[in-house]
Image 1: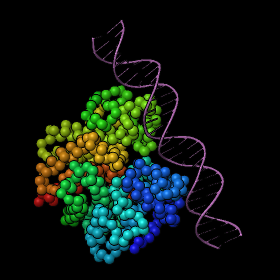
Image 2: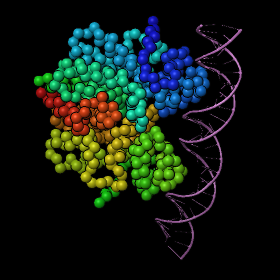
Image 3: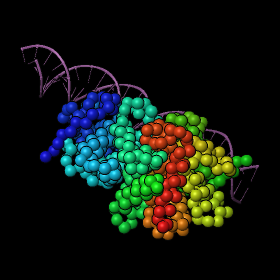
Image 4: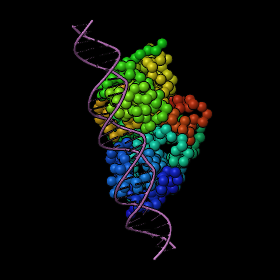
Length: 225
Length: 225
DNA sequence: ACCTTATGATAGTAATACTATTATGATTGT
DNA sequence: ACAATCATAATAGTATTACTATCATAAGGT
């Protein structure tokens, strides 16, 4: 069974909301396929239109340009993760359990057990790891930020920080710890695949997860004492 | 006094070595200025030619395209850092001192006390923080990697790992620790400027440095016991 | 049956990302 | 001092990209 979840997306992240029409959804799913297969710098709306089976002009009705499209996928990912964290940690009792669960979700590539809409989760996660940071590292970041594009990411960081403060009230850098782990894990996964000498994943693929779990507990334990 | 250091760059990182001619050097310095001011995605060789006072075609004689140019700057940065680490830690005696010195150099924006060639160090460091990772996050990473473009980065990671192993022989993830710190610091600097809610730098700008220094010592201390 | 809206089809423009050619001036070797 | 070589300037040209505009048609709601 495929559940169709409609996530609240910031208004300026699109020209016309792709979640509202069949073509819009088709653009989203095809763009994930295409970016994953040829890379973000190599996509054009023309190629994407061909893949979707529509025209260039129609895609421009949904997104101003490919940067807005990537940003949309990025924001969608964080909205989805925010949703997952809220619902899936709801039944857990301690902050420690909730934190561990959320971190594990964010640093592993494990998919939600509920298949979401027709979006290929695995490919979306790949895109976030390989291209996601590009939607942050742009000259007009401040304008983009004002549109609320990163609000879900910020909420997640804020939520996880709250749990950290619960566990180790004196720890002074909860936000930095969280983003170091999240972004670090993305990067190390990429390194493991392409630049293994920058990592220590020779033996097995779970090393990234182990490392950041160790990092988390170590940092919180020392500050607890 | 400006010292002209000629760093060994991998051969395929250029069409014609820009360090060998006056125009080549002018292209390097102007590209740093221009990328820093308008951002990597917004530069074109035409704009760059205008800035340098030369023609588009002349720039193409040095670099195939702007990705190769960015990659060159990135590789140059790591070659420079590798050189600095080697020379500036030479006189230090313990692995701990050497490691601390190198990490501090890599995560702070402090410039070398020797002004190097005519390259604006401060702007170069900004570019590395804001755009550097884009030369890694590209679809043809594996081909690029084979040209040796990242060899200096790898050498640095390997050197710092060796010092870590010296300090804490049992620590299992030295490379991941090093790259987590280096890349993390770059990101946190960027966040501090544009997305402060993802960091904890409200109070002062040295927080990034403090956090990663704490991270380093904490991780190594626990594994020592 | 009418009105609105979404899409398709087509065309066109400006900028980008190159490649090619030729002339000229500077540098080097003998 | 001269020829040969090389680097750059100047110019032109092409294919692709990144859009914008217009109009016809199909689908969906009232």
